[in-house]
Length: 401
Image 1 (cartoon, helix red, strand yellow):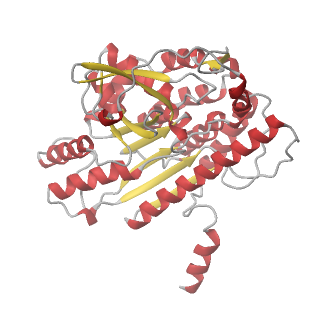
Image 2 (cartoon, helix red, strand yellow):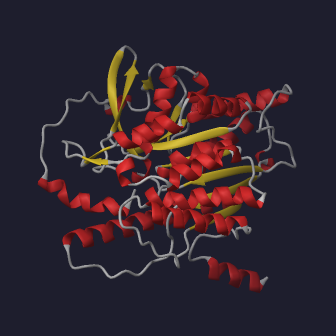
Image 3 (cartoon, one colour):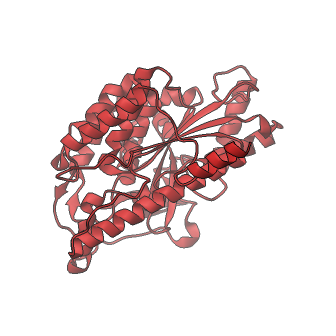
């Protein structure tokens, strides 16, 4: 979610209109609905997922038979996983970091990649690897606000997301989906998060499985899920998905995954993997993870004189709220990794960088962010091993030892 359009919030109470008719999924059927009849392509965050567990059991069984699988639980293997946060135009920093990492030469092939909001747009390129670095740089540095959104007041938003839809159609085509499907077949996994606004829950989509379906419906759904994950409420209209339970059809309202989580990762995915291991009699202590988190935003408090105006106060307050939520999500991931003895690695925009953006998506500012991330990573990025605020504690503990 971008602070640059937070001013739209203050207009909510000034706008009224005729709401479109809906047929939402009843509360007691939430979690039972399927999209286009596609089974086991998503899970609800915070709930045990039989589909995720079955998926990982299948990977284990494939490895036992000598088939290709990135999850074969070899004692000497460490699984590299990447989580990419939201951040709107700040996503240029994460794009630069990934491409600079390629230049440096140690960027791993990730077994799992997750993305939220702009992170959902970046995630497929990060998943496929350095062969898509050029497209990633182009997408995150070459476009302006008018290429992303078109201001048009309606009953459910202040802008049209059609320009963003056209960009997604250009970059996420049949060829890209085939490559994602091929990586999925080898046992790698790509997940994107959206917010089901009716249920107030994060929904995690198995994008590799969607891609592996391989037809026009799958391509449309793939694009819609990414659009939904990046659809900032009020600024962009929600993305409606037609779903079914039995022989009845309903609609779901999905918006930016950042409404619930600025970055998501481990609980739903790793718990499914560990449950699969237990069912197959594998010692879960053999599971080794190296977790990378790219925070497309700040974690430090950045001083800024706030004008004594309603719009300025609202923008600054929401920006502060979003940043605090993002830091909280990082702490949650850190705690989860430490409980499992995993290796935690964090990157974020340094507080010394001051944005001079003149519009929500300013290509000059995005190029500066991209170059900053690229330079930091190409020289060998010094990943933060603890969340912000714990650096001094870690140093004191090391000194005692």
